Image (tube, rainbow, N blue to C red; front, side, top):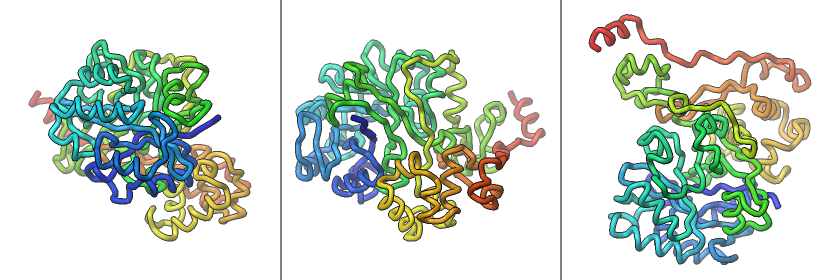
Length: 421
């Protein structure tokens, strides 16, 4: 069977997370999105565990079901260098054992959704290996709380402990991550890290599994590439839409080329804010190959359907107008993933008109103008004027020009910095 899964989300017990993150709402929205499996997220929090056991029916060890959607036991922990690690548990007993083993090293393990643990990456991985818990770096490349913010390699972080996967994060895709040869042996996970159950958050990144049943045991086999189970597709945001794709100021979000950021000593020339190195530039620093492993599944770039609708309607992504169109499309065609990827454009146009249909076509054919994200601000999509003006049957011949994205520092400020150094 083919199942789409989003294995990294958060509960309302984590900071800056929507109060709507309840299991019933998650199950309802997962079905609309087209997800068959969702990670619980935050399962180390005892209150969130209680809510799961109250709302769900146990399928087997490590697998639960709510309204036809399967939930696997997952959590994210922060180590002593603020690096985040994603955990996937084989059972509730393993969750409870991990909670008790981490308790002496954490002040918030029983209150926070994403606990801070005073252990190293290697120590957490050793414990996960001991308890048969799958572990890998969460959003591995982001510049704040991720593996490659603190370390230059998997080995440097985890030592000899086994790591089972690498989570790409919103600002990277498999093509970028494969520029580092040490990753070639690992399975990639593409998950949303959702803080809200809304359609532009939950499932904005997902993994397509080829497995025999939607259970932990089958997903584990796929991640470990055993018994013919496997991931056949990673899908997620165009990396340019991620918050940290390009090097940019974390205050005013002005984007810089890496060499210019270095010359300015990582201070924004326009506002004085701190410039954060982007995922794109960080991967280029670490890149050591142009090869790609033969068993790597394809990566499908997505943009949330609600954001595409909002772009055309010129409305907020959570407004009633956008939600009405989104719901109409899903009622007719079954799920958001189907609308974004599979449904014929003519069928969409017949239902809701040419304007949104043209925008979905532009997304599928990478004809949208993308304004890349950076410094903590998501990227944006724009529908080119040429496509707006064209008729549906004419858009295949339209040529699009991308806009200049980098700020060019003043020559005088660069010369001044060079004199100081």
